Image 1 (cartoon, rainbow, N blue to C red):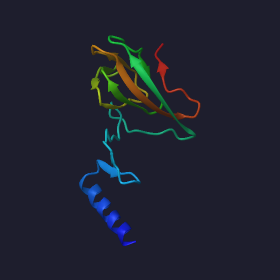
Image 2: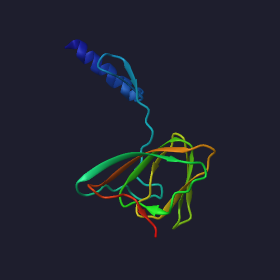
Image 3: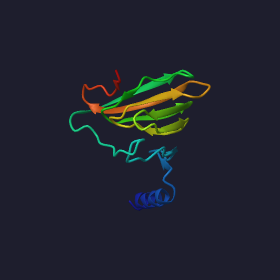
Amino acid sequence: MRKILVSVLLLTAAFSVNPAWALDSSGTPVVVTPLASRTTTASGQPITLPQKNVQVLASTYDIAPGATLPVHRHSFPRYAYVQAGTLKVTNVESGNSNTYKTGDFIVEMIGQWHQATNIGDGPVKLLVIDQVEEGAKNTELRQ
């Protein structure tokens, strides 16, 4: 019991000093690298979750160099992690743009028309996660 208590105290001290590592059940180090912590979207809106039957969708996007996605908007939260490339996202309502590079985390704007362009030399690779009401789509294209 004393061994367990000492282990817990050591782990607690380690986490308070350096929260970027942990140990698995065998004592092998596991590196945890925080990528982002956000409370607002790219345009400053508070993040609000669907109110009923939440469904999480995960997908990958590969966007060719020079490609521009059509103007669109999202009804629910969408998060993207840039695995490779450089992406410029423009809010077509305000004209404001953000540029995201490899390793960046994006909390996309909700209900605002925007589009994205691959402005780099190579493909943009995104890991995209949507939180939607079950069965709903999260992308509406502007007509």
